[in-house]
Image (cartoon, rainbow, N blue to C red):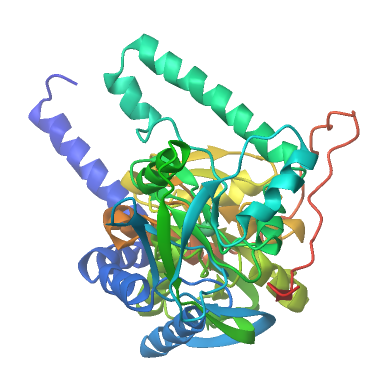
Length: 516
Ligand SMILES: [Zn+2]
């Protein structure tokens, strides 16, 4: 419209004011205002990530986090409790010090893997050797006794510490292609080297430990500057440490060139026997249909190389903040709004699977579950998870979300039921309409997912704020909807064998974990 007469401009303004007035919803406005003007996200993030720290299942920090969350909800006058669902090996990370002491002295960047044995208060100093490239398992068995009293390196030497995007930007096309080709060849050769030992990547550390190695040295580069993934150890008596790419490369090259590097390791973790594990559950009771449930969902546990800031600190903050805002702006929901902060998602959705198993009365009366668990980014994808009529109710609820938050969200209906990946899958398997609020990636897979760099500074608070608003409005709308949501499933495409597609089955949680 290029030119408007005074009259038509006046009409246009009147119409748009009218439309706004008609769609204005004081609860939606209240949610947006509270989220933007009284955000608690930064404070909650600091308390959870910086003060409490990572939340490995079975660690005292996980229980501290459970207790902290209950206290927060009580502060906000929201009923909350910790519900025991299982037991786990109790293990607490301590300080890890790793130093190269020969041929020169350098402190190395590295740490124990989760559940790694400690060095029992001592500092262990020994030579470092590389798993050799031998003809076969017989040759390896002959070599094996030589590891006695030594640290053994079991990861490949990375040919470059620069991520591919860096090569792409600055390398010549030829050198980038050459590097990738060399790396592929080396990766394949390394896999063969491990296979020829007669052991797998999982059983090799145990064989080395049994043969008298004093520790296992690994490096799981996450393909980004400074980022390593930190998972769990398999050794039973000697420590397993992960060393950053740069320092691992240093040791490897020295060992290979015959300079026999020597390292000192002190690893101070503690064992705490068998400990109980919990889900933190909080709820705002429904006034009209208290037995029907809208569930906000995010796992509470994490791996512990960083502080679990984006996996899943941000999902946790999103749902806590949404609950706080709802209690303030919408204190009397029609249906009960429950939040689940699940334990041990990382070992197989254990907390949420246990909840589904323990609460059939809730599961059969679920209106909707909204789970968030793939990083700090604003939500950009929403799938109907195979529920035939999800487009109808999700579409209606989404229409109430402010444009700036709703516009980037790509919906997919009916979509396919997720069989895993995060806790929504525990509910989908039980036939309950559960959905994943799926985020923009912000280099999640490379830089923060299960890495030593998953820390407070990676949180993008504006995006998390936007997600808290989205979660609160969707919960509000799901609670208000006059109709109960349909659970009708779509017919799934046939599998590769031509058999009809099957809905994911309910799976049992591991209720006692980390113990042999
Ligand atoms: Zn996660």
